[in-house]
Image (cartoon, rainbow, N blue to C red; front, side, top):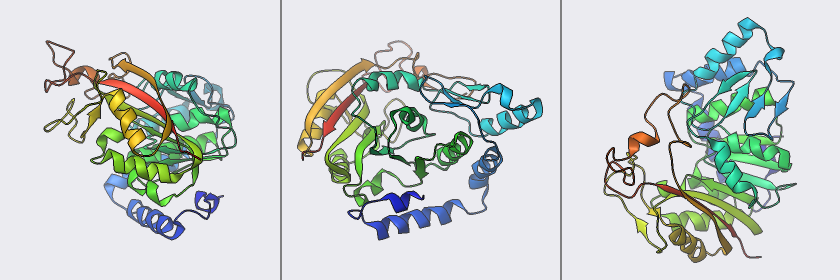
Amino acid sequence: MHYLDRLPETVDLPRIRAAHDERLRWVNQDKKGFLRYRVPCGILERFRARHVECGGDTVTIGVAEEIDAPQRQQIEAQLRAFMPWRKGPFSVFGIDIDAEWRSERKWHRLQDHLPDLKGKTVADIGCNNGYYMFRMVPHRPKFVLGFEPSVQHYYCFKALNAMAGCTDLAIDLLGVEHIGLFREAFDVIFLMGIIYHRISPIELLRDILAALRPGGTLVVESQAIPGDEPVALFPEKTYAKAPGTFFVPTGSALRNWLLRSGFGEVELCSTHPMSSAEQRRTEWMVFESFENYLDPVDPSLTVEGYPAPWRVFLTAVKPK
């Protein structure tokens, strides 16, 4: 069943369908930027894993014994076409993918605070290659939709899920700016690593509130600055070399954003400094990473002289 057929009557289906169709027309162009990822996706989609395990720290799609040596060589070459790998770890037919982010660490911090996902309709905004979507599978949600406008991550997820065969996971090239069209569509929304890239965080949170069903839960994770005061940094140009970072709040500031947006039962679940043990360069992500974003003399500061990043995550509930 296509995800568009799963949506409730409360959503703006004509505009969602129009956005969906427009993005498909865009990505189906025969241009190098699209073929770069579409071709390896098409090759990997031919393989079907017999063993799939999403409950461990490493998402396992197939084991080595399911393929022969030439197939392994072909699969690994196509997986490398999706470099750099940002989220993971994955193991695909015995090929271990050590991504930039040790994403299982974030999942461990979330697990004890997750709402019940069984039978729920879930959105993962900015889902990347779908690592967290796969980790939701053992919780038996009714359906999980990933919002991901990046062509690279879109095709990477499609390739992984074609091999995994998880029928209740889907992805669309829609971005966070489309979430307001999905009125009362989701029981749970994950917003991880996104909010500080938005120029108007309150407006975004109000759109997410509208997209939740009454009693639904938002799980939000964000880059942050240390401190207890409800303040946010607004960098002049870049923050940790990222030009698309606007507001970097403290945990208490993000809590207040959620309250001012109309959420209730807001809980600050975790706050901790970032480290190169969790985000680092690997064989599958060979570019600059966390250690390159810090002042080489004083690692408590970014290269721009701002407080070095922490991570916070909170849960919040839409009132019934």
